[in-house]
Length: 267
Image (cartoon, rainbow, N blue to C red; front, side, top):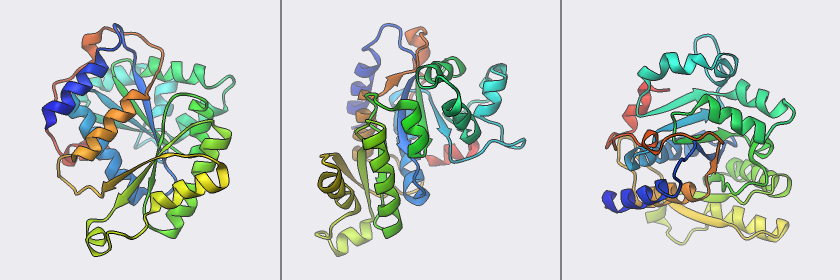
């Protein structure tokens, strides 16, 4: 089954002769327990497809002990000096760096081009940040950010606030991912889920019909399920270029069948 998805991913890679790093996005709205497991599984799927991946984690601030995007913006050679240590995928603390990009004028095209300059060796860059910064950086683009919905009242509220900003202010059409717990699904398969709540709110109050995806909450050290691999392919289809060209061969790394344990060394 992995070969089937890998072949599809290879087709997407071959769409451009000189591809640049491409950006996909996930909204962080305070529901890390649901968001992070899915994010790591998407990273693993993309690596297994043959992509190199860097996550810009704008929920984590840079510091002296944990340098990140802000350091790259001040010294782009820092990335070259640490490139030999890069694992299968990379996570870069980015809160201060993203805030710096969205407050600079003009942002958007200039900010995205700058990210492409800083990360030329990566084929996929995943932006993980709040809806406000995401709207500033990629508003009115073809990107379809993910909003992860878990079945808690707090997550439903924060998810709706993020959804409204993306739709109304940002001109973006997010995909809502409903994270299902296998135990609760077996106990009550007909129970309304969080994504249906968010999508109904979008339809009723905002006038939008959105895509929704149901995914059973991933387990640690388990290979991505078919639903997550399909979701990764969907994200690739709406990814936007970061404006730096490079040889096609630089896009691919040898596909890896690792687990989420790989991530521990790169966080």
